[in-house]
Amino acid sequence: MALDFDAIGNSTQPAKISWTSDRALLYAVGVGAGQEDPLKELQFTTENCEGITQQVLPTFSVMLGSSTPNLPMVMYGDIDRSKLLHGQQSIRLHRPIPVQGEGMQTMTLTGIYDKGSGALVLRTTSVTDLEGNLIVECVNGSFIRGEGGFGGPTVPETEWIMPTRPADHVIHQKTREDQALIYRLSGDRNPLHNDPSFAARAGYSVPILHGLCSFGFVGRALLHVTCGSDVSNFQAMSARFSKPVLPGQTLSTSMWVSDANVQFQTKVGDSVVLDRGTAEVSS
Image 1 (cartoon, helix red, strand yellow):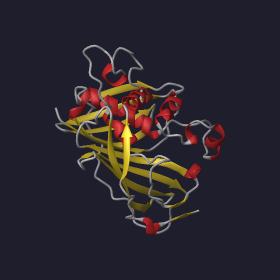
Image 2 (tube, one colour):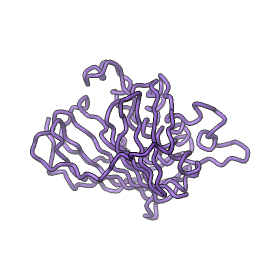
Image 3 (tube, helix red, strand yellow):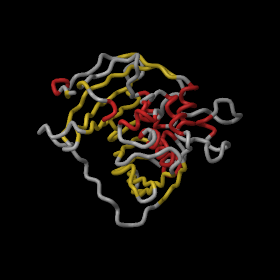
Image 4 (cartoon, one colour):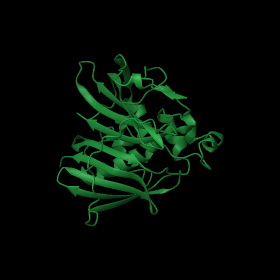
């Protein structure tokens, strides 16, 4: 198993992608929309309610920016998938995502960084409409355990200081016991999240929840609390995945709001699971 450092900077050829209303609805349910009250969030979970226009959750960006079997992908070496974890994620929206549409996706291997106990691989994906106008940009950070210590560069860090004042908002969201089985239907079929044998090889007693599922739960909370549930007010979001979440656990997110900037941190009990969270919003 070896990382391919010569691949840094490589990009895929633009590939055509498409998405449907059904796919956006399934994603919304996969990240808990309507779970507490089926009659809330109908704009994200239904397409035929009188007086309600379907909208797309901003974190659906990760679906447009993901690699799928029928799309080209920037390769970065021969990796044992049981050693791979989602390390961090960021999204930036340049406009609300259409309910259905077509676009072009391009993925670039941004860098491979040495974190001592592992390597962090960053890939940036841009999605445009067919006229070339940006819709979303996503940066995916994959952490490969046991691949660090190669003397490479350290990860560029953006300053993030935990606020000393009490959080402006604390939101609690309970996930379902079968949350990973629902979320995987949106396209992330990594067996770490459903296969007990694969999870055991990765060192877990049971399959864990997708990091991007937790990301989507928290994105919904940010949307409703800081954007008035208006997707046009949601501009960007980023977070680091610090510990795994198990399906059925409750996510507790603390938010500190300063004008258009939001800092957040998500815990399960006393353990931080999403750290160094930031969002950009407009009122």
